[in-house]
Length: 447
Image (cartoon, rainbow, N blue to C red; front, top):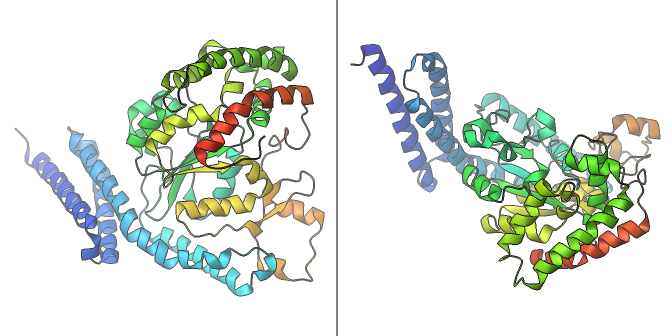
């Protein structure tokens, strides 16, 4: 028989669940209610619940009620995001997006810079006055390895609404580890607390071609509303970059192969193997989408043929099929990694538009490093609009926020491969690149 105190605590928890459930149902019909008032009330309600749970949960003998209330509260927070916050974002911020879309730095006026700073300050003020909780991410980068995903998340994190985990520069590896079996509560633990306006984001490049063929399905079920970013690049240069990366990690199976073979020797050995294997499959294939066995085979090769993934990762046409099954263009964006190198700021603007957030990181915020030639972030300020302002190379180097020194070695000439080896690899990928172009409806400059 329950004691009086225990009965009271359980009763309060059931009331919490009931109120949260009613709020969710009401927010389904937000056009009938004052969304702003509803949002304030919901925030207040959640805050009181959080205070209560931390003071009482240690005394609870049965935690099932506690976890059930957490589920409903998270659903409530997600619903608030899709109503009140979406309205605030679109009404309060998006109207400035066109102003920030100028093609020349000279068109940026002092007024526009002031407007941007005012909006950023508004976001920070909102963060100070509204409750933040652990949420599942709203943005997930799934790959491709060695195509620039590190640079992508680094520069996107300059946006005040995008929050990334501190662990490994935003790379959780959650869905390729045993952690995913622990469910959404374990996944939330990786991310910083966010309010309903902010976007949690992570990127793990090996999600795209993971040996787990069910990864896309698992992700969709756990984070159904997340937007997916896929950054692809020239698979030939991607393979060369991956080879150099593994060469620096000799303890991995691919690293052992890289240490024992030059890149040219690796290509001469592995490309013929892949050609023979795929040719036999290609002769009997009706379409890439229906070729489920090949998708499984390619993803599993990393377990049976050391370093095979240095080549098979670039067969984008196969790996994208499982993702197409669960995501469409509204929540799946393919980013050109080669374009990201050439026009970093423009790609960052494109992604902000895709995410539906204000363009507060502009292409004018990116300048080329005087030594590497790669774009770095340097937030544009009023002084840069002054025609009399001259910035020396030393001053520029100091002000730039660039990627690590280990990045871009195969693109800036620091690492070389013979034209013959690269040519063989390009020829191998040509058929699959053309199929990928047709599949995505976009032509990339990889041929």
